[in-house]
Image (cartoon, rainbow, N blue to C red; front, side, top):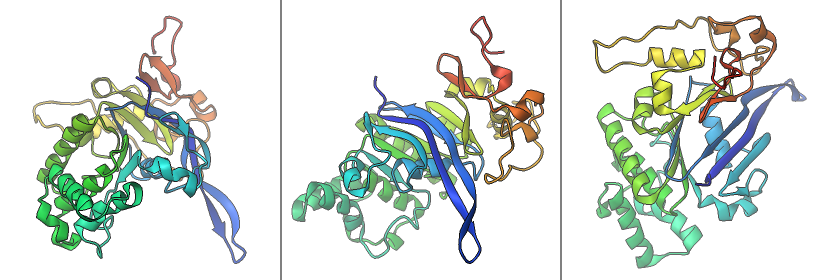
Length: 329
């Protein structure tokens, strides 16, 4: 099955300017060479600490931010450097659900206008035809058709996120980038929205790039997981493999720190000391070596490439390089 989304060495740097003349004094390397692919009907979860570049990846993919380098292919078409006019035909194929359901909806528009706006812009629907389509979309995400006349402030947080999902679904996209879509919701509402997203994925064969820091949610919805640290992917693996045996020390620390539902179960604890370095002044060699308990001299001077150590499993760590027998150390 061909990927619906391919990301090759994606880079996004933000210039740092100072002084009255606004001289560029450095670069914040928010995304520093990220690569992955996404197949139809698949959920790839992007996880990591706050500030690791997860949301920047998502916003760059939907062209809310222009990439500094690399390539983004949507259904085989290179959209990396397309301007707004050239990008317009492709926007319907990739949509986004934002983290904050309170800030992502226009408070001056009714629910019907919010969901109907993409239909007006791309399918030239209006009047009764548009209203019928909007009513169908609202009902599909668990809202009543009568909600069309309500404004965002009249909905709860969970209902607003359902409204955001209906807007994203309006044009039947191939890919939905979901940026922390349930982090602002109560736990019980989180489960409802996650289950709704999974039902919609099965019905419409959607591909999700699901951005989150909550490993419990990720374990429920994800098929594959990409772990990010300081702008780079350090491990990419099937969900079961990653949770059973993480190979990168940072992924190991994340899994060890995740809450466990069974109080009798235990996980080996890996203590990570220190703070995340500044993306403006990244360490030499492996970005993680100042905090890694397994770091060796090579880690301080040589940056490890993201390598496939077993079929479908990619790791960026010198300690996990493939041996002559074809297995990871």
